[in-house]
Image 1 (spheres, rainbow, N blue to C red):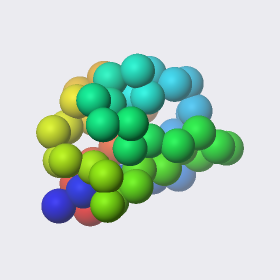
Image 2 (image 1 turned 60 degrees about the horizontal axis):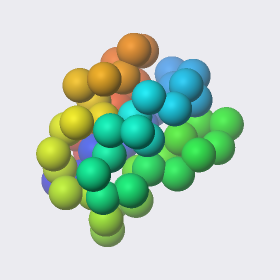
Image 3 (image 1 turned 60 degrees about the vertical axis):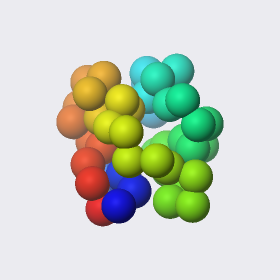
Image 4 (image 1 turned 135 degrees about the horizontal axis):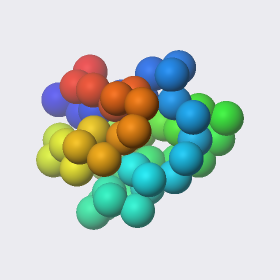
Amino acid sequence: MAYVIDDTCIACGTCIEECPVDAISEGDIYSIDPEVCTDCGACADVCPTESIHPA
């Protein structure tokens, strides 16, 4: 199950640096490509707004 980023994302960029498979894309609200995400949870662990969670 891939992780998702909800609308509380502040686009700080912290999660992008932690993703080992480059599954996160920048935007007004960041997004995670479910085809690339390996469900490691590294991004969720560092998110300051707790905007990332399992789908």
